[in-house]
Image (cartoon, rainbow, N blue to C red; front, top):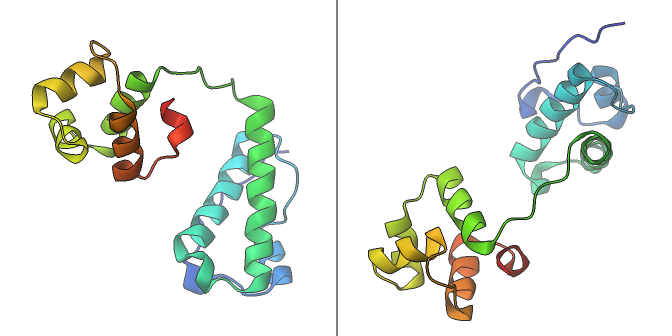
Length: 144
């Protein structure tokens, strides 16, 4: 049996009650890419709206789909390789489209120092780590 992929409707078009959401996409264990895609699309549509706009039924539905996706990820995706703090920072900067020079300004160092920190040629100090976590809204644990 193949599962058709769903193009999630706009949040304003989603049912506000649990039964209506289940009629659109029944929450069930994820076993294939299509089901994963469909659950992800529904999560995306609900999450983009923001928690404050969700009805209690929509919030419950979002929680269940998120749990199913997380379980599938834990069972099927390889664990993330731990990164050194400077590798994580360089990768994160690339992901968010921020230059090393911009990051350096945020944490109070010049471009050259920021570049050496991001390459691991110079150790990150506690001041650098705290400033990075605060300015990039990252949990401190990801940088130590």
